[in-house]
Image: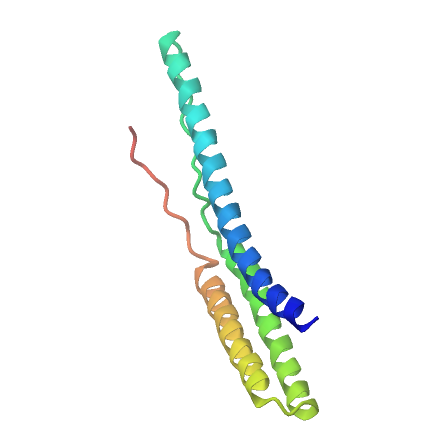
Length: 134
């Protein structure tokens, strides 16, 4: 039975790594196929004398409201981890786990504060309008 637990202990991380790499390659492959089909469609439209529409902009522009949402979630997640770290420090003797939870709460909470700070600085800013033409 102990031999089986050792094998399972090795297979679980190995399977996670292989499946993670497989999902990444699958995502890249399907993105490539989508772009290839878009360009083939555009090529056929040009061959028929039609003007193809512009390609959709795949980059999503972040708005200050996105930073407000992310900042709020991260701040409260950091606060929750800090409370969990405090409770763990009183309940268990594993100081390394308590330290990791405390550091994670500080990092995530700081990221949340940074996003909230950006929101409060950028919420009244007028977005720049792209005046360049093709």
